[in-house]
Image 1 (cartoon, helix red, strand yellow):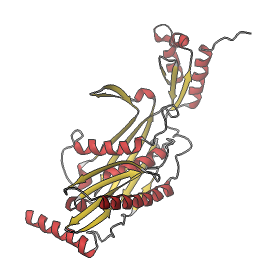
Image 2 (image 1 turned 90 degrees about the horizontal axis):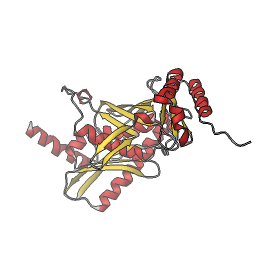
Image 3 (image 1 turned 90 degrees about the vertical axis):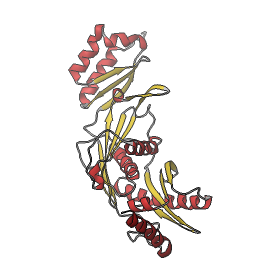
Image 4 (image 1 turned 45 degrees about the vertical axis):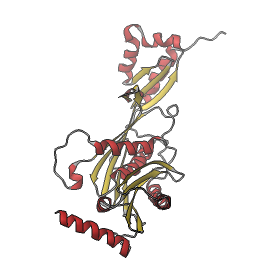
Length: 329
């Protein structure tokens, strides 16, 4: 097997450098066929099936109230995270059979890269107080499933009605470097990642880059090759963004009817006790009567969440009446 691997490595590289052809017959800057299906499941808040060649990601978006934020326990201390991205890479996606255990380095690393690429484009918390969770299920993988998760994640957020600052696409660039010759490859497949010298993932909008990661097997890289790779990645990114815009050009105006309606109210701090009531009696009555979630912050901010808009409005009116300040005259 080692001899075969060596022959495969040498031949695939010389084919690319000498003949200008890639193992699957594509040109250096050619991207595999892209298909986008959305929404996949109308019951979910946002969903998309993003396919590029033999890489396919099913990405779903779920919206929750601020109570759903995850407490992150890190070295610097605890904080609450409102944007979560989980990347799952089951063994069947690459034709393997292995027990499914907890997340490994791949799931954690790829999930972090995809999350970082999308996080900067989220609306400010004051404008959109929802907790957002994306889950990317890799159904099939032949190169760059993390970048498919970025494209699918961006579309799922649009489908969920999250007012993003822009659409985000990702592409994986490769490199074959031998002697004085080199070839920069757009949208690398698994074999090109395995036999190549670089895996350079670039994610971003039409305006600029939001995240990138590079794996290298060569000692150092010239600035000219890096410039060439970034320019080729920019063209590839714009090509994918065009495909994404054709499927869904902007975030949906309204969130899904199945997503909770979230309202933010501000009450005087001295009225917090009146809203909660003795032993929490009053707030519990509101929650049970209207089937809503109510959270009260120390500064008088009240978050009201529920799926039934009419019930939310009734609960809101009651909170406003309870905490209304009497004015002179």
